[in-house]
Length: 164
Image (cartoon, rainbow, N blue to C red; front, side, top):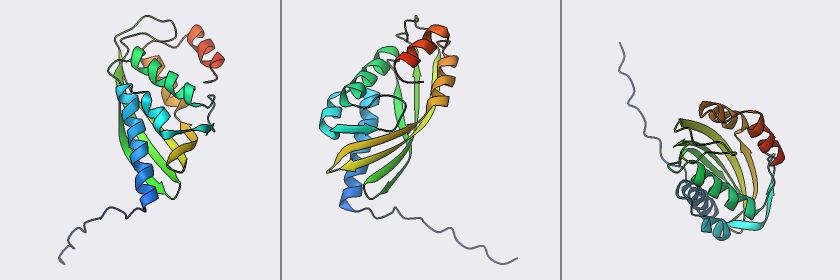
């Protein structure tokens, strides 16, 4: 039997200064969602943010989203799974875990835990997030079902907020 080749070490890709900065900003935003630090939005998001998601765009919406997640799921933690930087764009796959400790959409807290996976494509201009696509509606709905928060009122709230 011939000798098996030694596994080759895969080196980290070499990023341009722009790509490295964009990855740094992306990681700061992931951390902001875990810590509830909404000041990061003003620091790293262009006021002309364009959203290609079902939800409305804007820095205020991002700040409100951070607040809602921290008040509803006090222990929420976002973790980076995969990042890919290419020029002015970054792809981020993430996982969030947490416990329904504060209730959501007018529902009392259930104490139930969840795990949510999602993906983001982010476009940058001058080191700031300018455009955004997110892909996590189905996992979001599955997580709401897991914490027993998805009923007709919650669905109506999601629709009125532009999230469905």
